[in-house]
Length: 192
Image (cartoon, rainbow, N blue to C red; front, side, top):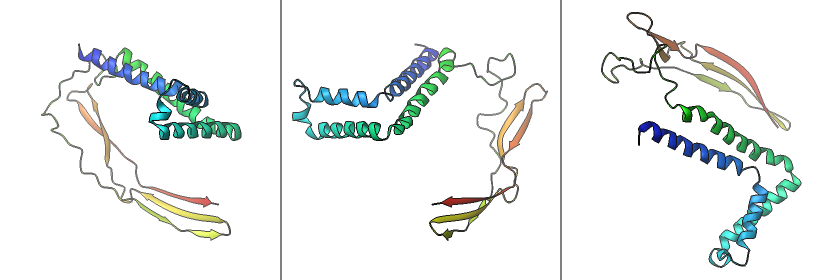
């Protein structure tokens, strides 16, 4: 079996897991009711062998049913979780079709470019950054107010975030992109 086929199979297995976990997160009450009824049916040996597990499943179903009846908006959390699983599964459709599509290299490249120098022969430059934060807490009746000041990269160091290589020039040019510059911010947090 080729590496490409193995990658596709593992990706398909991962996507199938996402789809199953996403689809089964929608009907939680119906699923827990079905599980509870199955465990309490006459042919199930579970109540005799695992009474604590059966009691726990009964309690979980009761909690889900009561929550759906008294606070139906709580189901939005599991609905969004299920939806997120399905969206992530859809995002993997492209890699399943062509796992090697996003290759690095100039236009027309198959992703196999000559690298000059030994493997891991280059390192990012030394990284150093100082961030400061100050916060003061004030109690105002039932409310807590916290004004704050944040200073990011106090010394305005140009720390390299990533390098890009322009292979259209001869010799290729390496350009570094820096992280955040000096960035002050102020704000107010309120709790009650």
